[in-house]
Image (cartoon, rainbow, N blue to C red; front, side, top):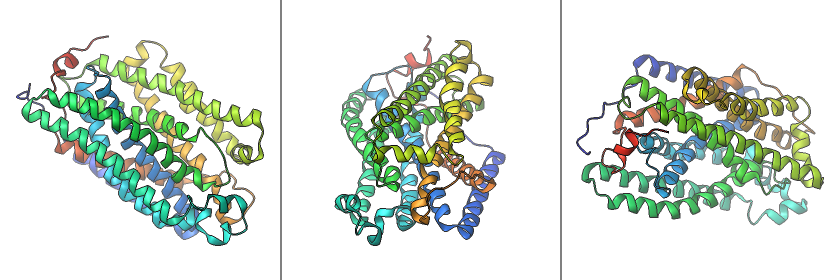
Length: 398
């Protein structure tokens, strides 16, 4: 199979121009926001950076899952996941920005805030600037090296056709998934949850995973459609592959709803002040409408619309649902982060407010991801032609 011809993917000049334009608009909106409110600009940057990061994490996780389960159906799609995982070094560069804004984002980074606060003093051995930096470096190193290991094996197999590389990736994925589970959970606590250092939640790590994996599946569907429509994957992917991806999206929409409800329910019936205040802040002062929108965008619309068999095979239905899921992911991250601005501004609450600059920033970050992953897809062969299961994947039917 190593000699199989795969058309090269090339994004049109018009599409690249539009993406560069959206990135420029996003950067301009971020700068204007910084001029008006530096704290909000850093929180917007945090939201966008985590939004970008989630797609790369989904690519790495889904790649490892396909290897460890010996999945055959996804082989002809695997390079899309690998390309998404290859964006993790860029996410690491964006992570440097999070470190640079540490004093604008995290209350615990201010000694004056920690001093006299019993809880923050107790957490100080963990929540401190030096250890936080070390952990950030460790997370991105684990993710980047894991992606490099799996993708290197995949590329080498294109040249040699060595079936032992498949077994090597399968065994390596078992270790990678353990490291992935630990690192993403801790990263969720460090990067997102610690902006509310007094809040307790044992489910936030899996909530973060459910969100970025659902959104990542939507992105995979979009990229697969772009490659299929351009002809790059025309002879390697059929509608049954999209049906499988849509089933994953449907299933993980329900999983996201289950996790979000479970976290809320556990905190609601325990009724502990150190837990409930987080939801109180995010279900009042206008934020309750965002919470309702999240239920619609991330749970009810995908669940109900994708339930019929035909909806999963119809691009006119599937792609708009994917777009809503992506909007829901960005909106949820906005919902996670923005109410915590009150801690840096020393106010009792932050009322919900979203203007064109916020939308421009979100558009800029997703455009940056699409541009980066498109450049990667232009540089690599978009089908793993050396994989022994490629033939079975090409002829996959449900």
